[in-house]
Image 1 (cartoon, chains in turn yellow, brown):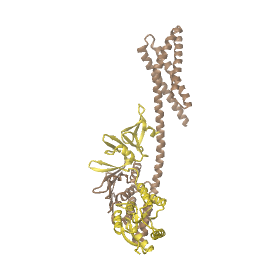
Image 2 (cartoon, chains in turn red, blue; image 1 turned 90 degrees about the horizontal axis):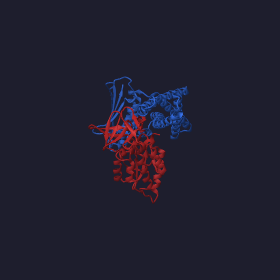
Image 3 (cartoon, one colour; image 1 turned 45 degrees about the vertical axis):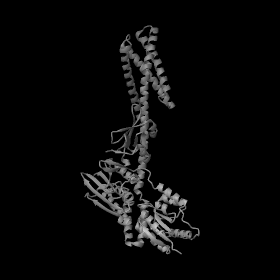
Length: 252
Length: 350
């Protein structure tokens, strides 16, 4: 009988060697076909070696373990390795999927090995890119994306700058551009207000009229003009922004 | 105490309103005397204007007080009722005044006075009461907005303080578990490295737990914390990470807030160097120029591509903390580093 083979992919060498050492001890018959230190190498290694099992770290440079799994799970059994990650753990538990948590303990790995051996011994065993895997990858890929912008890329002179959104007082549409106002500077960016509105944290950035979004943490006063219109004043800069009637409810 | 203060305010407000009303009345008297009524003496016009204005004012105030009890001050019905009662009663009073002061036929004056007072009372009364009512409404709504704002700010500030305390006390679990995982592996591979890493973790946690509860530590302490942190990552990432820390400030015990440089370094590793295939270098440079402490944190990582604006949740916390601690006088700037990576510059007054 052909020996069972595996590869290990993790960007930290110590962890790869650590897992290999444990596997050697607990499953002497398993043949480790190779190591990969990033997602791209993992993919080519799997394609080259055609292992039965791939131990994949989720967070890897080049390509995440999830992306690698998407490509190879049809012909290779994937076991994810992850450090503390509540989304991942939740997803694995929900789908009753086997995974290894860092730091890897002997007891946990023994359980995984037992299950793997049992699976490989069932006569009608096939890898199959099943629905379980598909669902997990989908859930994790969306949960790993941070939702809102934290830095805004602007051009200042010939160099690029990144402005933390908390420094921004307001965004205001002007012609084809959007003005980004900070206490000291004014930058022009190309993203339209509408796009920005969707990508900024709505708890901090409020659209107060068709052409402006304000950072509510930077508001100093809210006044009424003679015509009873709501006007927002900011500290440090001498500019006001009027609130259109349809957005007044935000401040009540 | 508060009650006295409020009633004082109330009296002051009433006197102010009374004076404004009298002024309005006097102006109206002038206008009427010069432009409309030619046959009467100015004194009579003046007195009648005052009677009319004050009566209207009096009834509207009563209407407002009644309205207040019902929960709707300055209601349209109240103002109309006040205005009407004011006009009728002042017409009556004016007639009585003229009757006694001139001692003439009551019937002649009744028609003339009543008509005049009624017409001018309505003509001037409506815009003036509208003016007062809308002004009052603006004041009320402004008060409401201010109150709401103060409430919101207080809540926000409390939330911010709590999360700040939590943030400072927090040691990122992902970092901790990955690091401990390394130590366990290292026991089999390189026992000396394992020992070194445990010393680094110990030192890092000690500074984190002891120092970061204070608002200010020293720059040297913060750099020490960062050094431990980077040493840990150097073992974890191997050849993929290099770092350099240059402190050229030459000031003993220079005060600096904790976990500021650390957060930016953490950000550089997480979003710049770890995702990069061949890693890179972090350089930290501290110097003092013209009484300003400048700290540069440069990484040669992936930099910010089209979508990486999402990266760096810690950055905005750092920015807000610097703003709070240095009262808006601190600067935090991010620029592109050439050929790759990000350069962060912190500037704080000494």
